[in-house]
Image (cartoon, rainbow, N blue to C red; front, side, top):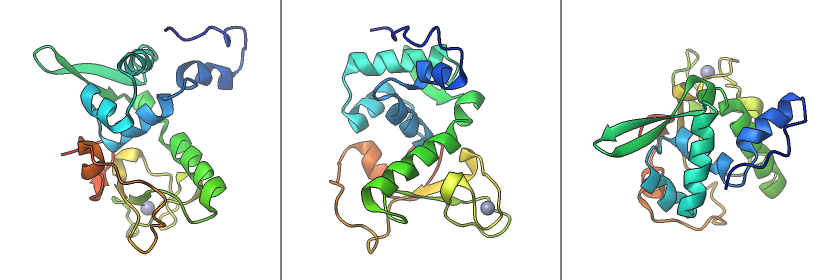
Length: 179
Ligand SMILES: [Zn+2]
């Protein structure tokens, strides 16, 4: 189903962003793209998303210039974040942090993101996606993500066993393809 045109007459920037990002699943698809998931089958297996819905969300993101579709083998394509797509990282990080705070309180929540290329030694990102060690807003490509340390994990997340979930149990540089 194509996106509704409900926002067409809203001449404001949030409405234009919602036209691209506001559909159910879209932010999760983008999150996986930042993790380095690029292939349709991997996205499907990791997100448990219906095939037609995933195809629709990917097409919208490609049309909007957020993802680029490129062949990696004859007849097979993968989806890669464009420069405009990479710019969404601080917004995505902030949304995830916000929902973690509502759910489990300050300091809790999901994965950690560390400024791996930090000139000041690196630290886990804090509010707004800032690196507390160097004070900058690092691009996604200079970050490494890891799952919670065992003593931080409250066990509230069910362990998934698809290939993407397994790969993300180890520290991983954002945006680069998962092994
Ligand atoms: Zn830093």
